[in-house]
Image (tube, rainbow, N blue to C red; front, side, top):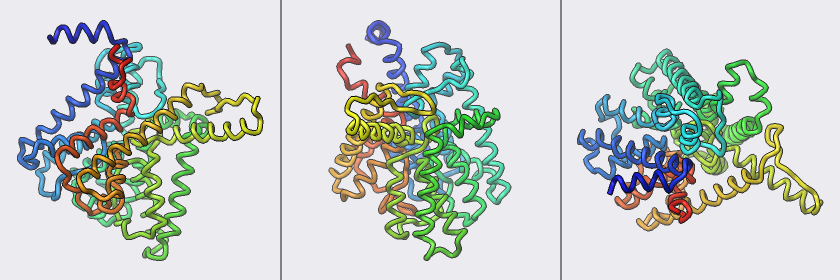
Length: 429
């Protein structure tokens, strides 16, 4: 039976389909294996909860079923942090960088796993591209860990929080996350590295190679900066009356904007106590996510850029019915297929979010918490508003809800298409 299935996969499925299937099966297997240390240690005796914690880690969501994180032994805390660090850049990208896979096959695996609508090769060889990305990822993690250590954290906490930040994961070794340290310096360091982790790693590499023009001409980078600046200004003005100083208001605005936008989920303040305007901005950021080619989750900024350009073209078409309008992105004309793909992705994202919210509400949860849960799981954010905000324990949902949300987290991490394509008749034909 097993040989027959393998023969079917090789003969009936194309290279693209095999790549998608391999990526999905790899992620499922890794998440199941990652649950074993939690389960056998006895600290998460329920296997469903152990799998949920593992999936949350590898998908860099950062939701936890643990009530007292600090009671865990350090080896288990380190494994917990390692799951999100490995999942940040991607298990499959790591595999491609270590194994001698070349050509379309290796690139197809990265396309199936990488976050964003487009995947660019930094260099012609895909294995070298993956290695460059991983070396950059490791270097940034090491630099942040060193800075955190220099400004007051012990080595263990510094490494755990560097893993969490660069993976945009959100797992902390402290129950109160960054609020435990009450250190402005540590909060600024984490905020800067969260923003870097949510940025396109290819552009970071190009900038390090002294090619700043690539950064300045990139539409997504400009939009990313504009979103951050706008959110920070609005939140700072909104919370300034209740802040102890201008610096504190600015720091809290930058930190929490970075945390939600990049889908990291670390916190330094109970923003549930903020004015409605500031909370509204954070809720809006739940729908965005980081840049393509980053470790962040969410819809991605570039998709909104494409939709905004297409919306502008549609308005022009009303005025000039016979005109021909193309999307210009970074000096290049975009293909219609890209627009169709982005529109389909956003529609599918909203549909899955709706069904995930419906699943949560079936357990008797209020509608706001249900929608919030769906958004933070599908966007791999891990932190929301209300009952899902800072200093609150994740609700103890029934087992079937946790299994459903685990699938939703994997869907969000693998950019929806990689998994949803299995539910089409054409795939198996």
